[in-house]
Every structure is written in C-alpha cells, then in structure tokens.
Length: 194
Image (tube, rainbow, N blue to C red; front, side):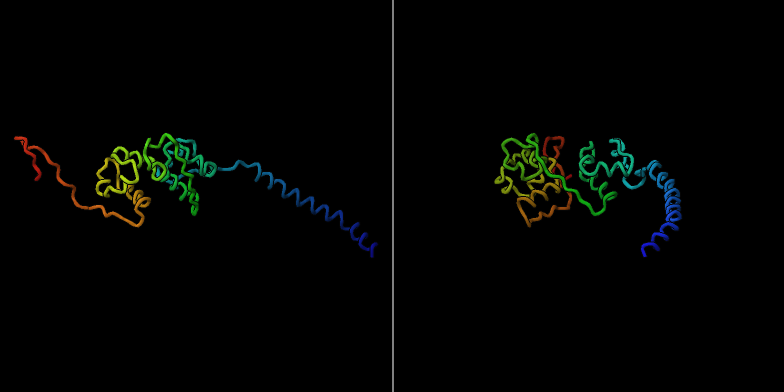
C-alpha cells in the first residue's frame, strides 16, 4: 500500500505542481494590479449642504475618506464646525452613530461668583449674570416671562434652564403681538396707542 501511494505521488506530483504554479501565475498579475492600483477617493459631492461642504473643504477635507479619518475629534476641532454641522456630517456619513463629546468647562468660561457655573452652559450663565442672576435662589425666584426679558436669552435657553432647575415644567411662550412701544408725541407725552 505504501508503494502504491508513492507511485501515484511520483506520477501526479509534477502535474499537480504545474497546475498550482499556473494558478499562482494567473492570479499574481491580478493581485498585484489590485494592490498597486491607486485608490480612488470619493468626493463629497451632494452628500452635505453647501455651507457644511465648504467648511470641510476650507479645513482640508475634500473626500469621504478624509471625513472618515477626521471623525470625530478632528472634525470637532475645525473652526466653524459646531454640533449642528457635526450632526449633519454624522448623519450623512455615519448613520446610526451619535458621538457625544465630553463637556469640559474651561475656567475662562465661568462667571466669577456665580453658583450656576457647571449646572448650565457657560453662555447661559453669562447671559443670566448680565441680567443680575448669579445664584440658584435668584434663578428659582424669577418667573419665565422675566427671564425671557433678559437680553439674548431665548426660548431654547429657557428650555435648558427648565430641564435643569424646573423638571417637568414647560412655560408656554405667548404667541401674540409684542406690546407696542411707547413713544413721546410732539408735546413730550407718552403715546401707548400707535
């Protein structure tokens, strides 16, 4: 039995080796051509709004592959890319993913003497401080309508304040006309009906 297998091997080994060599030679040019061919990069095209695409290109990102390399940290460092533009990029190129950056507050963004630092975003703390509100007690004593009178404090900021300090409350912002301004007439009397 041992001699029969050695006879078969002796007869067919050169042919099997020749077939293996032929297969390797046929595959080799294809493998090298695939590996050696320059990788084509996919342009951004119409995948993003023009403004977002322009910001990416301004920051040196011109292809889909560049976006993938820069995601998430490098993208967030680009000048002009805030969270809303970052979410548009994420939706276009990374569906189903939602990167949440760690919220690190710099000491420079804090308002000196405000107990609201860290509880609310630095922008809201600064706006509240300009309106004379720097403590939790002052904030809780203020009515939502009063808060909305503070310059640059909008409904979105009010919603953040509500979610942190008044969970479950939702102030309905009046949708009517703003009150007419009071202007003096030619005699100096204030007019309220215009």
